[in-house]
Length: 63
Ligand code: SF4
Image (cartoon, rainbow, N blue to C red; front, top):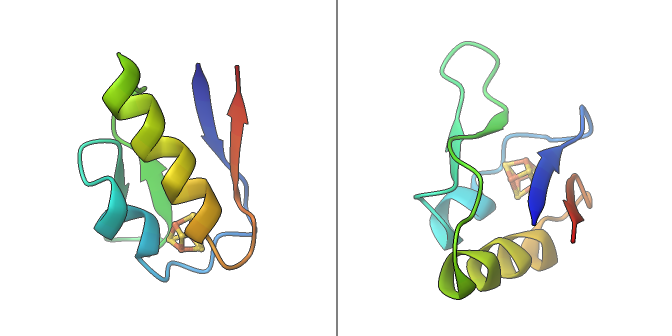
């Protein structure tokens, strides 16, 4: 699985709250960046949950 964040991100921080090991807010752009790609079932599940809570659908997941 690979996660990607599109420029649509508004920096709301929801994905960081759900999966802090995977996403973090860039302090300069105040947009989310992928800290590390998910490895294993738990991280993949959290990444999917983060994509679900993103209000602007900016998290894209490639299986
Ligand atoms: S949940 Fe979506 S809009 Fe909010 S910070 Fe994460 S990627 Fe950006």
